[in-house]
Image 1 (cartoon, rainbow, N blue to C red):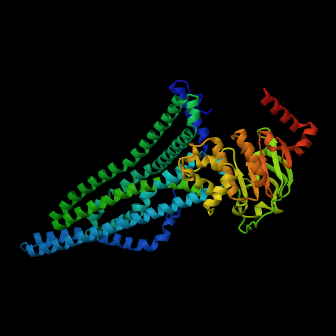
Image 2 (image 1 turned 180 degrees about the vertical axis):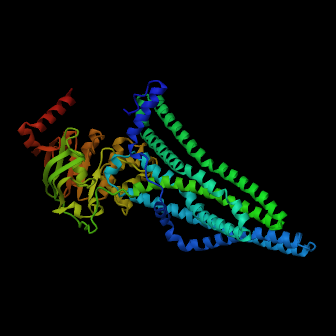
Image 3 (image 1 turned 45 degrees about the horizontal axis):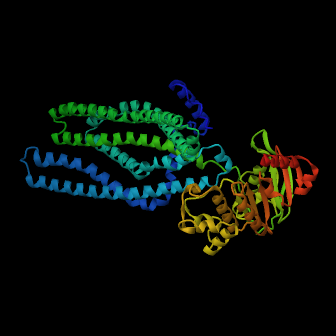
Length: 617
């Protein structure tokens, strides 16, 4: 049952339990307490490096657009002072039209440069997002099983979707807009101070006040968006768990409890989002208030300077235009900083995964494993899933090429752990696993696993056709080889009875197929890969007796010359194994053939007797 199954008390108690369980289930999503730093953002921007040549014309268009924006207010000043109200002269309509024509040309140039910039930076931004998502997905495929043992699938999913998507605005508009606004601000400040230093200084006196107020919000906003990302990760994790376990939920009539749990998480997420959004919006009123105050100072002090013939009316109008253009980028920079905070929260979570190192590492000089005979040796293996709790205690086992080895024992005895070490999903704490005398830690995992096939009890079927699922064992296999593999494991007949035969579409996990049919497809997939070592982990548990007999006959031929490891609770399926290894709490208790172990009258005999009595009851 789920850890949520006990949430049946009143709302207050329920919420408390939910919070407790959230901390238990999603402990990997604790807040990342790292200070904001530009080196982190530089690492993020490193993904733009491959597109630096494409960025050159984008930045050129940005400069052109910024310069035209800076030039238009100056034309207003000259038009007023030279054409509309020239000192001691009459208005000049031809000159006014000249200035109007130049302004029109600048507006057109500004529009064209902005259009080019927006179009191409969006294209580049999407390429960067593609590269980042590709990098994250490629990296997590290299991570070891320990990484996934402690993280729900939804938590991993949200890093590749939500967190990467949160960076889209930064890459498509944010970087260029940041540079454009900075250039525009510096240009405006220089122009205003050159034209009239005192007036320029007076209208910008409110800027430090604005920065003091806004800075106090920055840290709170950053942690608020971190909290939002964590809440969204938890929702995704729960959704993934709920969909995967829907049959169990309905079977135990836990829909109402499950809904309450989701409702709580959804409510918490909305509150976190509203809190972060409200902090974001606080920048707008600060900018507007500061802008209004600056405008009042401009007209109050500007009027005083006009009355004393220090500046002209045109210069005051020009100042007003530049001040209007000054506060817009200030506002955008405030929002940009918020965007950087959001990006920071997401990038921290993304880089947390990227910085994760596989616990099953591969040597730089790892050798390619040549075609193997199939000799396997476990040399004094000690292994722990958790420190201080050994799952295997000094296991030593020699298997000759072509031998079939059956691993039996109670649940938790270490059978699957041995298989996991052979496939190098984990590395032993002590000891070595050798194939043909080579330590598997010295060879590449790809070349190892390409020669080891595995059939699990819980067969995973991918979305696609039956043919594609079998071909997953060897992607270059021909259709004839696929049919031959399916026929060898007695899957061909049921496949041909499907609506489209081998081209029948199956959804994720193959829900349109029975458990036995999915296992037969898994057999075909493994046999198509033609491994030298074949692992059958409860592979016949869900197949009916008649089909199992057929498979056993097929396996006699198919396993000839291969080294095979079989894990089975139905002991009748492993009586013909060359060696049967009986495990108990990570220790080999007995080893021998079926007849030898029965003659001993030990643990194996007890298992056989207990199973016989159970089936006879």
